[in-house]
Image (cartoon, rainbow, N blue to C red):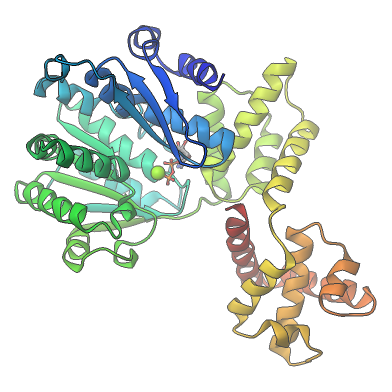
Length: 439
Ligand code: ADP
Ligand code: MG
């Protein structure tokens, strides 16, 4: 039964007294087949709010890991007639809920600093030591799995240690709160929760896109906090000015302060991150294996963690120390799964777009330099990213035999080896295609 599995996962990750108090009383209500919603029931609104804030992400993580899509986790309170209002937490209880919603392992100490995230890290540290003064607001942006949430929560944990009031919320959950308070006509409580704090941390503000009423409320929250010099820190998956469907006045506020990008980690940073994760999860890996994983996996740190997790499960099941061969095997399967969705067509469209030419031209017999390069790039990427054989690739281009494909492959591989700029370009294209193929 799925709920038992979730409970086991929570048991591992939740302190035992909290587990007995908050998790055992939960009831699994539904997971409607096509919706992305998981609903659990708690005995009262206090436990519901507490579990959703503090442990909702563990449940969501778990499902994401199992099914590949991240669900929205809702914890509803059981309808206990007559008792409802009495069981709502008082404002002071409510405050302790807000302040405990952070993952305590996301600290500055456990965050590896490298070239790719140095600026964002410096700003984050500086603002947590000097709230609301130099940089306000701060927006941290970057791709998936690059450490934005980690850094945002590290700020929260550091500020909380100074006994200041922190409100951390994923933007999506803030929207849910907004809708719920509107429905219950308790907007004053919503405002109390989001405005009565020393620092407001909102994760993934791209979620504001297209939600006009919510943006309006967000705007007033922002104005009020900012005018009282309360610190605001936001994260987004792209630069704020690029997020579509956000009003200009809100965008302009986001750009008042400091914007910091996190880029994909370079090899050394990846190695350092793997080491720290191994330490945290008590996984024992030889350096050559760590280097191997870092060099094979691209840049999404969450993905790297997933692989470590697999290795860990494998080792503990077999009671073995992991060897390089086993790590290679696990990684091979992992990369194969990831690449299975990619076709030559995907690659051809990406290359055509990049090279600004038409697929029909590439498939023609044209010997124009740009077209030949595009053709060779497709051959190179098809060999790298798909299981297609040379004859299959030849068939795609309507060639009679595959020796021309082999020849083109040798020639382009030489270019990639000798021309660093070209290598960068084709690697970036490969990452773009791989990301799309994953969806
Ligand atoms: P994002 O919010 O950008 O999608 P997360 O903050 O959720 O990414 O990071 C994904 C995982 O990778 C987390 O477990 C986080 O701890 C880890 N991670 C990312 N960057 C770093 C880093 N520089 N140092 C340590 N861990 C990191
Ligand atoms: Mg995040």
